[in-house]
Length: 249
Image: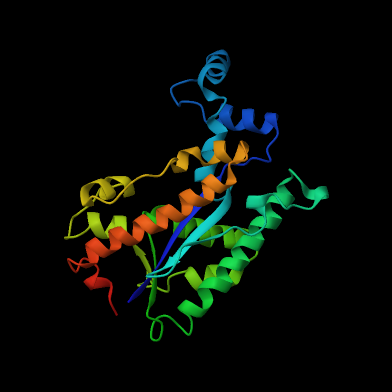
């Protein structure tokens, strides 16, 4: 079983107008509030940045880049055109512009993964796509964005034939569900600390939008690559204890 490590970085709905951002914030106010004046006061004080949570919603946000690393090889960052903002002038800043370049990214990712996962992974391919919290974040994001943006070949390639087929593996799930009944969440950083893996990244996923807005694109790319490098180190430690044995075909 040869792991292909993957990590996505996402952006919120950066093409939204101020009115759309406010509407999102006002709509997602705390449920205990009902009076318009109370909701408005809450929004003015706490809700103006709430729209940035769309970076967690594949129906509203965007994939900025995808870091990939085949075990034992160099990490690379697949970014289509948008990480460098090479967007046609007439599409700059529009929903169509962000979707256009994100689609390029997904097509490039499919071209990278297809030779590794086909012929049909059930019987032939020895590669498995690995992410941390992949079942809860990376894999659903990739499949849903591929569906939304018209890249069905990527969605079909990743979509499990059974619930989370063995070509998709989540280190978070493998760690927490080591034995029947296991549950909970463990962060990648927590595993790095436990294993003594250097965790020297300058930013976290929460900083990606700020860095993108400030034009710190190389810092984002470095962060994405470091994430898959750390993921490989986590894999090696867990695999030494046969923690992935039940996933092997």
